[in-house]
Amino acid sequence: MNWIELHQYQENNRLEAKAAVGGLPHSLWETYSAFANTSGGYILLGVDECVDRSLRAVALPDPEKLVSEFWSTINNRQKINVNILTDKNVKIIEANGHRIVVIEIPRADRRDKPVYIGSDPFSGSYRRNGEGDYHCTKDEVRNMMRDQSDMSQDLRVLEQLDLDSFDYESLKRYRTRLQNIRPDHVWENLEPVPFLQKLGCIGRSEDGALHPTVAGILMFGFEYEIVKEFPSYFLDYQEHDNTSTRWTDRIVSNLGDWSGNIFDFYFRVCSRITQEAKTPFKLDGVTRVDDTPVHKALREALANALIHANYYDRLGLVIHRRPQHITIANPGSFRISIHDALAGGISDPRNYTLFKLFNLIGIGERAGSGIPNIYAIWKKEGWASPILEEQFNPDRTVLSLALSKTSDKKRAIKTSDKKRAIKMVEKTPKGAARKQAIIDYLTEYNAGKASIISEHIGISPGRVRVYLQELTNEGIIVAEGANRNKTYRLK
Image (tube, rainbow, N blue to C red; front, side):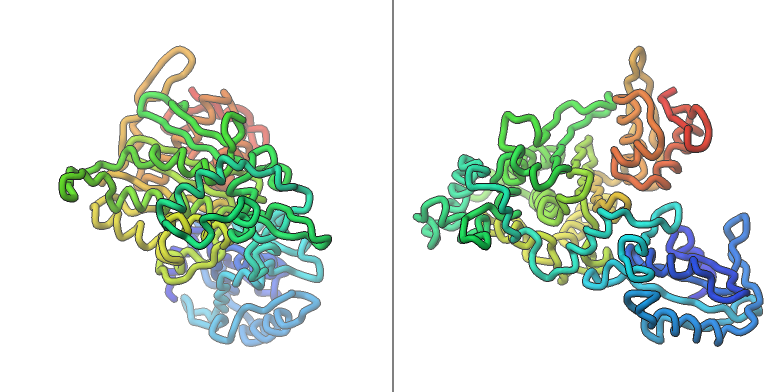
């Protein structure tokens, strides 16, 4: 570990420098909790962060004593609920003529989360975002507690719902697809209720009555029944062109003219999401083959988002399709690290029953192979590499897919009385898509604060402020007011 590597962690907010000349600061434990509950990071004791964000080592009177005090505290269950470190995570190194302490905090296993200070997880849990450590909300703590269990979350029986909560037309469409994919399946001739039981969509309560499970209601339920268990449940697919900031077509789950469940949403969106993927002319005998690895990968990405989503979280699943670019954002963080997800071979789905339901009708690759497969296909096509990002507060998993070698486009935005072209020059398609999402919001709602925009588009407040400043510098938006009252509008 050298200063250049530490600076890289500093840039992505996974490094915290503390002078610690008077002993271990209390904020160290908040940062330990925050790093463990998000993506991990480094704590440096005996280091100051200068005004220009450079790191400066300072004299530590007794580094060994600090390390001893650190181990004593972290192993005290009355002060810290769990120690996720080993000896190799804490080192004393030489830096600029001084000895400093480097503490590497890994991402905690979901079974150890939340990592918290004291005896109360609701008052002692922290997380990390673009602005530093923050105190977890009760909903965030509850989400981490749900993820502790090895039992699939979607097998829970919902006793407040009955069997009339299902849209049996959705179920009929599912059975038709099952028959086409797996003719003469052993469950083919079962009546609807026994069939749903076999699928794991119905379970018995303690009194023996039959009720939908979480998987059942999400897959085959009516939207107005789903929101009884998941108040923030919302599925949103938007199509945009290059001449307008508003969507040109949209599919949402709460219109009431269709079921609103995730099974029907998948097939309504499936053909739309693959429209930008080019189909080369290819024949299988005399029949044209219109499917390609790219089409399959896009369907896989859509299915993954629906299967891995945390529907208890406060933001819904949102898909933006623009010419040459698709963004899929689902509520909930990864249950494994991004590194493990990209490496493949490890799968820990939050809703394993949903995974089996889709897989039964031929949707979804073998567990743990979906994300690496998407990256491999994009590389083969010579396109810009996909961007997989995990966000916190609120928890989001965002996959950005460029369908071309470059994402720099001239986008036209339309205000109430004029159009003007804006050239979005960004290093990555992610930045361009995020800026466009902010412009879309300000076009639709006229004005907004950074915190409200962050909540609406699913980007952390710190990153939203960075993009707002860039858009202000480019002359696209203007800021009114100051500090907490600052509001942004299109210029």
